[in-house]
Amino acid sequence: MKHYNGIEVNPEIMCGKPVIKGTRITVELILKKLSEGLTPAEILTDHPTIKLEDVYAAEAYAADVIAGEEIYFGKVA
Image (cartoon, rainbow, N blue to C red; front, side):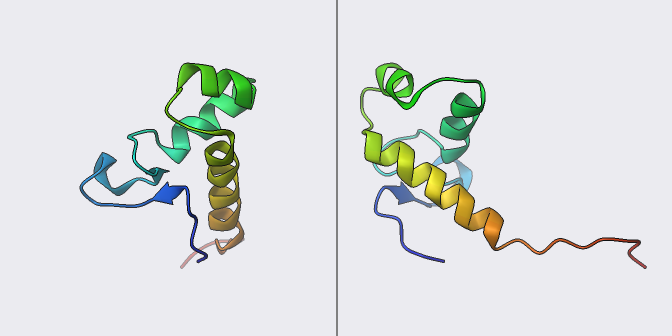
C-alpha cells in the first residue's frame, strides 16, 4: 500500500484505526460525514485541526484499501 502523508495507523491511537495524522479523527469518521452529505468545508468547520488535504487523503486511503480487496462470489465450502 502507498504511503499517505496525512494518514497514520498506530495501535496506540484509536485501536489502530487509520486517523488523520496528529489527531484522533478517523478516516471512518470523515467518510461517514461525507456520506451523510456534509461538504469538506463543513467537516473542516466541525474539525478545525484538520485541513482540506486531510479530507482528500482520507478519501484516497479508503479508495485504495477497497481497491485491494478480493471479492468472492458463490458458496464457500
